[in-house]
Amino acid sequence: MVAKRRIFAGQQLRNLRAARNLRQAEMADRLDISVSYLSQLENDDRPLSNALLERLAREFPLDWQDVGADSTEKRLVALREATADPLFSEPLPPEQLARIAEQQPAIAERFIALHEAYRRTGQRLEMVDEALAADNASGTRLPWEEVRDWFHFANNYVDPIDRAAERLAERLRGRTLSPTAEALEQQLASGFSVSVRYEDGRGLREYDAQMGHLVIDPAQPPETRRFQLAHQLAALALKEEIAGVVEGATLRSAAARQLLFIGLCNYAASAIVMPYRAFRDEARRLRHDIDRLAHVFGTSFEQTCQRLSTLQRADARGVPFYFCKVDMAGNITKRHSATRLQFARFGGACPLWIVHEAVAIPDRILVQLAETPDGVLYVSMAKGLVKPSGSFDRPPRRYAVALGCEAAHADEFVYADGLDLATPHRVERIGVSCRLCPRGDCDQRAFPPSDRAILVDPDQRGVVPYRIA
Image 1 (cartoon, rainbow, N blue to C red):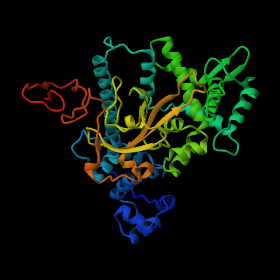
Image 2: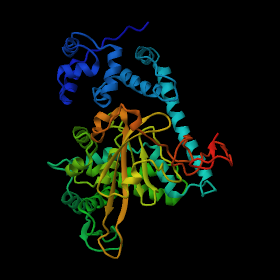
Image 3: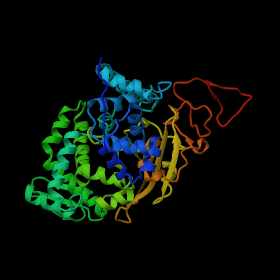
Image 4: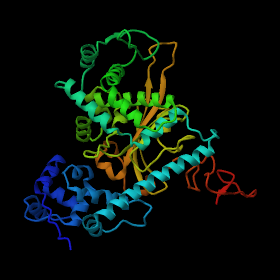
């Protein structure tokens, strides 16, 4: 029989309360305990119970993760997340989960791995289903689709490149949180004998490896020019790390491997200008306020949103976000989700999603509380953007970006502050796409789901001329 462990965490509780700027009474109320009990816990006079560990993990998921829990606590967190899947009728009691995590570690870890495999298999089946229903009747993935799916199944986090980029940024950033454009230029010159010129070229960035010349279009905004510098530095300074990842990827074509190399250079550039730990800590301090974060790191709104969706380092996870970029026609040109919400590979996204309204209203942030068919609530933020071309001859690019998280993380997301999370009728009921959405009463449905039969009655007509069986 395994002896019951006694967990004392007084200092961690005090640090957590101080970080959240909570008084003892407020903290006790969040945990549903008395102030005197909290005081005893903070002074290590009493250990944490399993029920209280459960409440701490539920109320402060990211903070409690950072406490530095041992392998049993980490296993318990993963087991709790897996058993909370809407697939199951109801989650297991905290005490039972704690016993399983501590007394049956092998079974717990196998269950966690099995659930992750189930989730990934479901995503792949959705991809196959959509491919069969799309115009691309052969189902053959194009090179850019291969690369997009590679990043998706890597959870949009590439550890060796992210850490290498963070080390490089540490050497270059000086007193700022991230390297300046001048520091990047100096490193290109001193480390790789690359000279930088700002003049009209044939694109946003053009590099002559033989001559060591890098030409950047000066019409780009400052944050974009800085990103182009970081991209070129990553391609040279982290060439071996990036090539190693590309070699290990199972891609079928040379074009896909080349696209992956470019994509990983962009990923590394993002990690250079927004180093992981500095960016994660500042994001949490600012409650993921995109404009404030962009100001601190000198990045664009889009760059900042996309970086937030990559903060999935095992020992320092950020809030699980989804991110996407949608053009004026409703095409999803960039997408990633660290949440349970997954994007459709073919066809448009759900028309009820706030991002479609945002694309028509530039420079205005819209917020939405939405529920997916599995019953999970999401807080979504979307903003329409206009990227200038620098010339009258070329129209500016208009698009919108969206960032969202599950409502369980609403305390960490400043955009949730004005939402009423407790009122069901204020929730927008969305889906992934019409081809996959099971909702039979949606007024915005464009076509029936691909896996359901339809019933047609010539004598009855609703919003659509059929009912879903």
